[in-house]
Length: 474
Image 1 (cartoon, rainbow, N blue to C red):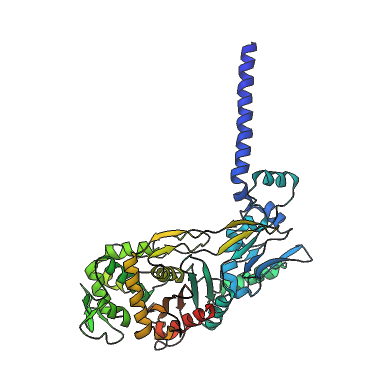
Image 2: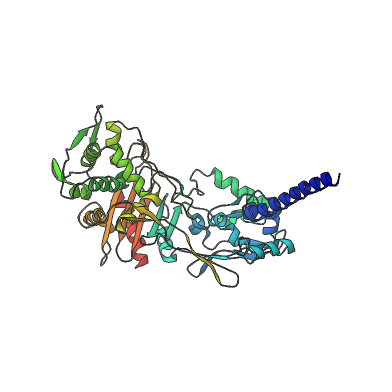
């Protein structure tokens, strides 16, 4: 009898121990995810009853909590809210949060203390942890220059330090003020949410990283890279007829200008952005080489880190006609401005692709640094030799080709223009993706609606915006 009782006692003890172990493990492993779930109403009430960490660009707070009266003792305010909205995101009692407000919610609320014991004490005593602040990589001068240059336009600018991946400017226009959604007046918040989402101009869309578009001739950088990696040189000659009948169709592909002859070098083809030459390059090296090269630049997968971006894509299962169009950035090729900035950055960085990131440091309430971002490599996009050849070719585009309006006196500039026809009704998309050697920055400019078809080209519309952003970083 005693033996049976002992067995029952042991089993019961083991069950209690397993339960305690499960509860403890659940707390330690799931605590942060549960606390940072926007649907957790209990945590939501607690978070809105206390201040939240500051987000900074340079020395300027661009998102911070201030004391308030009414139902909420603190409210979130945003300096230059529309300009920084794609970076900070919003923090709303009714609609949750996004961008950095979401990605670093644990740090901003103080629930990400790396000391597990301290987290446990805070939880048991009901005391909040020390809120942390975020030091972003954004350069306020570059952000302001991009914002000013895009006024009245629908578009985006992304600037990267190509040696580290640090995002120096990240602008999307038109934009919105996140303060409209963080108001203590919930009725006004609801009205603002409804109005913003109904606006046909889509001010809450993140055109810099969360939207994808046909990249047009900026994709010729990828095609040129694939050709060089396959053994071509900048001097390799390629057929460049005035018009090319796409294989298997009666469709004629034409050029926007005289390419310089019926056969030109690869460098000349990039310099004048010759469509028929690059279509022939695509037909020669094939869709597999194009797809593989695009993947090395980051197409087909997220970048990772604290940048929640859309995935750019290169189509599969192409026929010859579709391959030719894809080689010039048309058909179903899609890319975000962030993606094309990464392409230019990887070339400028001698072929090494770096992971883009927004936050350089997380700083505790006691001003001690909790964490510092170390640059992360996303692999090699092209060889150092290919990168050097592409750099020289891109510099030729700016010095003598379609990108002349990107020139900055005293600086070495390389780039590629792009003009992508999105449909037969609207004006084309204008692109420019390029880099400056000093300061070491890569910039992509995307403009969706700058003007008439004649004005809406990468060289006329996007390149001057590139120049203004680079000048702000000098």
